[in-house]
Image (cartoon, helix red, strand yellow):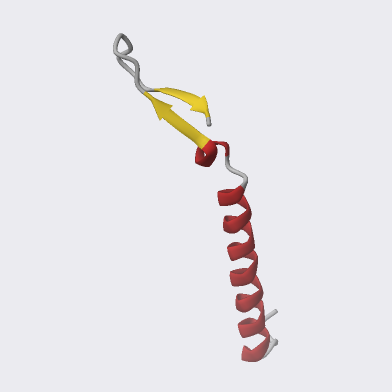
Length: 52
């Protein structure tokens, strides 16, 4: 690993950055919290999560 050039490390960093973007995009799209709506009832002290 120490003998690889800077171009290899740059490519590796780019690969990791693209992977992170894919991971975050997939998680945001398929998150259960992203599709839940917060509903507050008058007698409840905490908000209740309910599927939208």
